[in-house]
Image 1 (cartoon, rainbow, N blue to C red):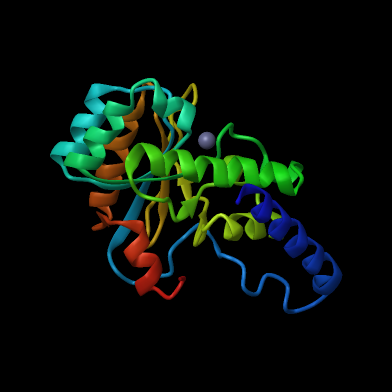
Image 2 (image 1 turned 60 degrees about the horizontal axis):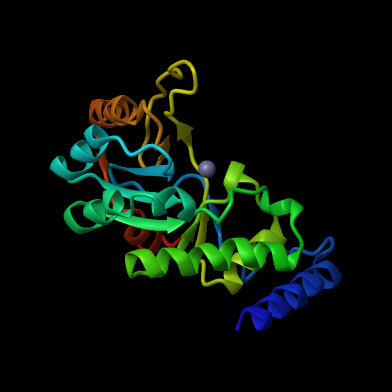
Length: 223
Ligand SMILES: [Zn+2]
């Protein structure tokens, strides 16, 4: 199974290199890369990455406000306290998606490496949370067509980057003006509760509500 996927990915990469150079067809048939959802609905999308810090206050906000959110978790970060996340999946409105096994820049890996990182993470997320992830957040937002091909071979429907990062990395970033369809990036860091609250307040000030990503990717025609 693993070997056939590697072979498929290697073969698909080769066909793009041979057939795609300079062609208007490049990228056709590959899962889309989405940094903003083209919708007129008054919605934004909350995404939270990695999973290393398990702050009860952040979980409380997600549960009590029933915030729809996509969690792009690293299996190793979720595994030492899986209950933190299974509680959110069970009581909140979150889904767990794919962020690779070990957070590499996927564009630097060969086909077997991409397969191990993306399919491997998908299998671990499914084993832990009972649902195969459909979305991939490529670490660092690093994507190219070979990464998209590898993702497709692992069952990924879309690669999701972001419109704005609300994470406090040392200092709080400037608050942007959110628009319909924007994708907000947060991280499971010690400042998540405050960063999440700031994102929710900013969305509300713009008349926008957090919404589930997958249904809006479908209804907006991205998928
Ligand atoms: Zn990450």
